[in-house]
Image 1 (tube, rainbow, N blue to C red):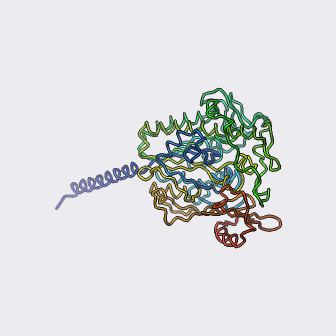
Image 2: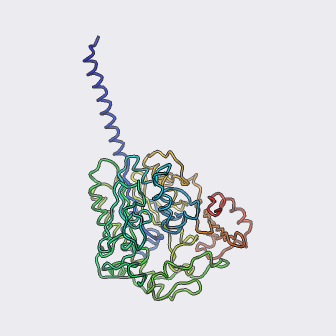
Image 3: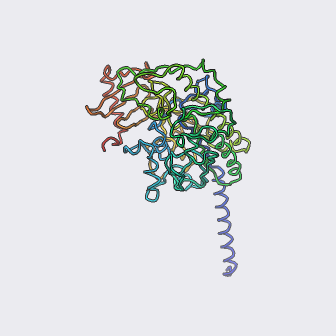
Length: 497
């Protein structure tokens, strides 16, 4: 019979071996879990070379696309920054009027974080499951991740209190996040100037002469630190441009010949559509030194429209260059082979389409945004026209990273689409704005507006009218009635308040 002391040592040895094996297993699991690089780009409609827009200079994003899945029909849930990002972070559709404005994150996450039943965001969920999470720039609604108003001093209250292991930002000469967000060269910003500024600027500065250049530098520096970590990381990098004002170094403006820039393909209010289905351009007209005011009654002059589109395109090219710096660093550090890359635009944008300058509508132009994903071992050069929604990102990332999902979201994992297996996917996406909601399927977009004289519908047939120029609801009442069942499936009670 073995004596008690040797037996004790034997038991301790066994336990030690088990613990050692457990640690090895956990390390192996961590190594197998992919990192995530999340690139959020504000107001980026799918105007990129990889989307067939060969007049756009976007070589770095186009290079990423060569190894990625390009989603041509990705739709956000709300065409405004804060609400769209709330849906992205939570995977949830809006259920109240507060969920369709820019304060959604502050009201439902920042101020209620301690009482939330589940994780406040998918980033928080990753953090709870072993990920080191780093945020740089605009990932949630705030420009730097902290809660304060445009003209208020920066606070210490995080917009996502539980999500970040590290939250960083370099505001440079602009002093704080919101001043950087509305930046002009030489430290000038919209709010301190009481909006007495133009909606565009070109300046003879280097990339770091505007804030997104500083963001790229910070992201590259942070990647070098993350490369030495054993645990997987989530790095969120939020770029401001091409959000208003359309500001970029002169060299990016020089990429374009303004006289060759085409105007909006349809610059009138859609036939049979109510003007109230669009918007009054409050954001755009807030730049008080703009040469012309936008309105639905009269389109901007062609010369001014070309100038503004020039600024938007230059801003895209500027951001593309910053994305390139981050992607290059990822390659140089040997991280690309085990890093999921997501490039996401928080909504689309109207550049004179329907006479609108801005987002804030339920048309395709406002809800359709750039969305590209590279997944090591899965992705290859592929373009898909399957309809996906921003709320689908949360469950998809958890699926790809093999992170358990103990709670439900309104999204669906599209991992099968990334793998090229798309047979069972239902092509449908829901959008919301103030008094209306919309559903988009493979062929149609149906909108319902709750107005004083009752619900009113607008129907657009993408097979015959891809630009959504003619509301055919009155011509096809049977189709409207048929699609109402699909529309009602996405009715969250948002308008029952």
